Amino acid sequence: MSYKNFAILIPSRIGSTRLKNKALIEIDKKPLIEHVIRGAIKSNLKVPIIVATDTQDIVNIAERCGQIGMLTSKDHKSGSDRIYEALEKFDPQKKIKKIIHLQGDLPNVSKKLIVSLADIIKNNKCIATPVVQADKNEILDENIVKCAASFKNPKPKIGEIGNALYFSRCPIPWGDSIKWHHLGIYGWDRSIIEKYIKLKPSNLEMSEKLEQLRALEAGINIKILITNEKPIGIDTISDLKKFKKSINAY
Image (spheres, rainbow, N blue to C red):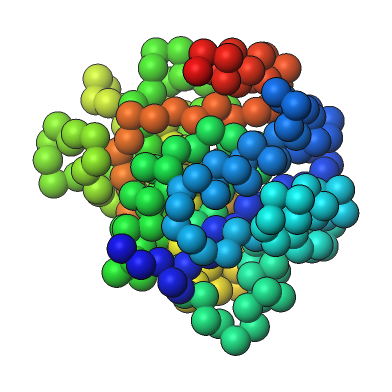
């Protein structure tokens, strides 16, 4: 399948709060951001891979990997704002119509997951994002974002696609039903991110501190893909150790 009007964008800022300069921390002799870039390359979409960053060191790493590094403002409040600036600079003619938005601290997103998101947005003007079943330890963890979604099948299986109804740091929905752990990887139709960037932060977004709620409040459809994968987000020393262990397992 051709993805000729796609691009992969990766926001990466140097000023992380919980783990200082984490994008540059070396894991298995490569900085964290390089692991993310090489994961994007392995997706084999054969599209531009653009790292949107606020520091030249990260631009240099992207270029060393044979990809594109774009300097962006240090003032962006979200990764979506950062990748949009980079996209507009790289492609002012708007030839790129579809975007895969990876995170600069999720180093082990699989080819299958990237391609699955690309396939959803290929023929849909929407946002697409994956969820995985939350385990017991995650349900009450406010750092794990939960998603309430509707599916045609009352007992949806891996690979099924539904629609997001709400995102929260609380355990939703109520009761014994499955709690879905939202993974912060997105597919965007370009027209949607253009609309989204112009919106002011919404009340629910500010309450939950979740920018995807801005899209839902504006009536933007967010497609939900069920996966069985759980990429390791690097926010703490413990996360780093977990990722190193996963590398050594292969």
